[in-house]
Structures are given as structure tokens and as C-alpha cells.
Image (spheres, rainbow, N blue to C red):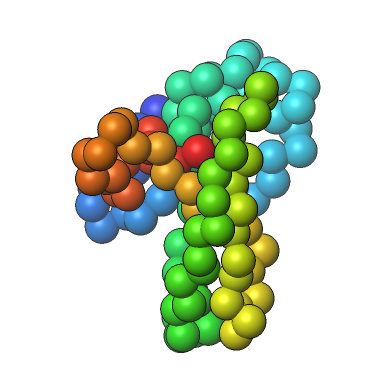
Length: 108
């Protein structure tokens, strides 16, 4: 299974892998759950756009502020009223450098 995912990633025509059911992964046969979690899928991913469902991109939300907390940073976001947002993608950037949104390592 990990080899199939690795093979898929060699071909740019293949845009990802689709898993019918992961319910058996909780039993961790042959350590597959560990391998997927700690290696193959260790970085978060965004759901790709599906223009056949909704072709209008969401309006940009407004960053209200960021406050340091003991457990991290609290971020205040005001969403646009026209959006029906379920979540936000927040990226990590080092200093004043531009963030690379194509690198999943930067997605929190």
C-alpha cells in the first residue's frame, strides 16, 4: 500500500490517492497506520477545489489580530458574510519571509 502511494506520486498526471475505507487501519495491520500517519501523510492537506460544486472562490477573511497564549497563538478572524467557511488554512512563516503555500510543511 505505501509503495502504491509512492508510485502514484512519481506521476504528475495522478493527483492523489483515493481510499475507499480506512476503518480497518485502526487495527494497524503491519504498522500501516503508523506509516501513513508518521511518514506518508505526516503533513496536513487541504481539500482540493471542486468547481463542479461551487465555482466561486470564497472572499478573503480579515485577520483581526493575534495574541500570544501559553499554549500558542490565538488568532482572531472575521469572515466575509458571503462565505460559508467550515475552516481556515493557516500557514507558518519564518520572520518576514514570504510563505510558500505549496509546501504542506507550512500548513498548521
